[in-house]
Image (tube, rainbow, N blue to C red; front, side, top):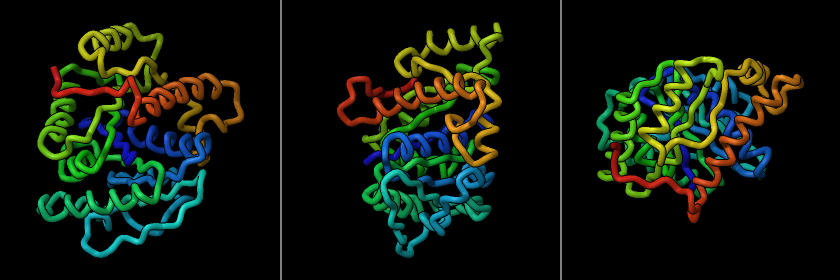
Length: 262
């Protein structure tokens, strides 16, 4: 089961952007059937992938009625869109709705090659449910707002879920995103990140590139943007995704394990 969650307890780090791009990459370049679950009430992932709407809201995955699994061909995406209704779930009883979500995600994982989940930017019921249902988690880190304390909190959350609820959950990596190579402060932050979490940091980074949001606004991934500036952006994104795919493979030697944050 390949259920990958993009998660961070801070907003604005690029979770939705990377969720959308990874879904495109898995479908277009790997011939995969990809299900995308948008658990964020901002619904950015759903806006970028609206043409792949499955007809079902992500909120329905927390409900008791049977889930209609869409028929999906190879090299295609099916979106389980976000909605404002997701906010009401934070008031629900976790023991009532999280097992339903986990069961429905497992059902979807049988129909898709990969399930990608975009989470809200705060620890709550929806983020917890995503981690409990997942096999892998990626934490995008924006170095402009980076702090060791924040990363430690997120890792403690991940490994706490792994220990108490989901022993199959693995950290695929910390991904440095929106990196400014001209910023002395960000270079120092990246060095600090690698120093503290060398086992977890992906050995690649994605710089701040205008071609990435331009492509998403046009409904296409950055590697389909017809401008020279998109080539460098594409190379960085594709390198990160290739590393993630290696770590998503069950027998990957580079799989990141851990029992807790240092």
